[in-house]
Length: 146
Image (cartoon, rainbow, N blue to C red):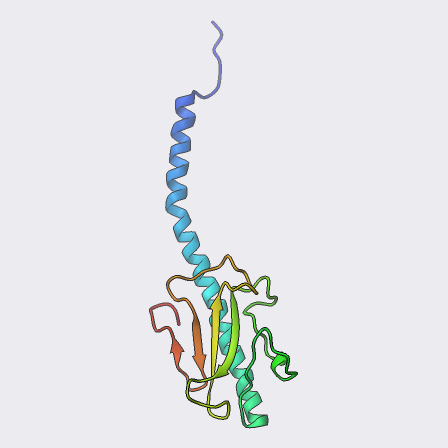
């Protein structure tokens, strides 16, 4: 009698179910790890830009507002995205005077996740926008955002 080697349909289905269960458990952890890494990218970019703003303040006795659409030569010196290129960035960054203040007194840097000018597929439902002011205020104050 000749015996055939191989797997039955039931065995293949059991393996497929096990793989699906493992994937459904692993994917949320992976997505959370990616969000934490991208959030770190945004925080690092904000801190680097604030150092650049402080150097600018030392030379000009005021901060410089900037955005992706800036036309001013000084504003173009500030990187408006969080990574090396806009396409690879998770955050678009803008700098403007703090509410009720002037650029001689305070600047607020805001990192917006997944805008049309950076990786629009990125979102951060836990923290959303990250911000840092020249007074040292960091928002949001939720755990793991800063």
